Image 1 (spheres, helix red, strand yellow):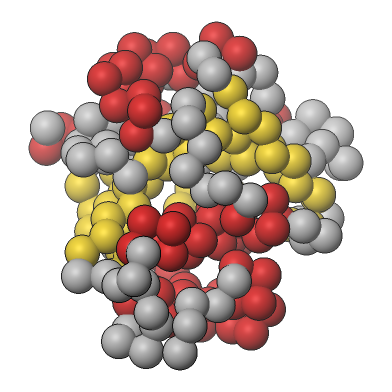
Image 2: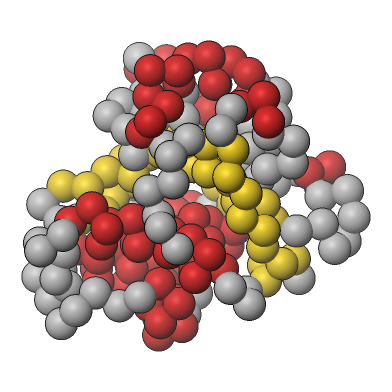
Length: 195
């Protein structure tokens, strides 16, 4: 079975805990062909995760100053998703809010952002990036080695063709984000104090 494109994957498997279990299962089962080109396949799944995090995470009300304020998903550094991220959110809304995708070269360019994927191209600057984002209600996500241990909220981990999550609860609390137990259950939980 070929890897399903993000919108098709999302529409076929629905929402809630069932979505999470099936995305992780589809992305990781022997039925999904990720071996031929593992990086693009993993990034397709990660794009769907970024979209669906809005179902499992709550931001403080002040993060959305108006009822029509969109969910902004940003990518800092090189874009590893190709067009998969735009495809994952095309025509979608979360809590009545549309999605906007933004690309940032520097952390100083980030104004409004709710979910920020920090590319591996920024790995050497993570300490500075996290310092500059301190006090902001941004879900930081990445897939660099030790991303969550170094202060990111969510780290994608690909092992044996399986996409899993590491979640840093201390970093989530610092960003004033509330993460649903449905997202926490299948994840590996770490705390910044573990560093």
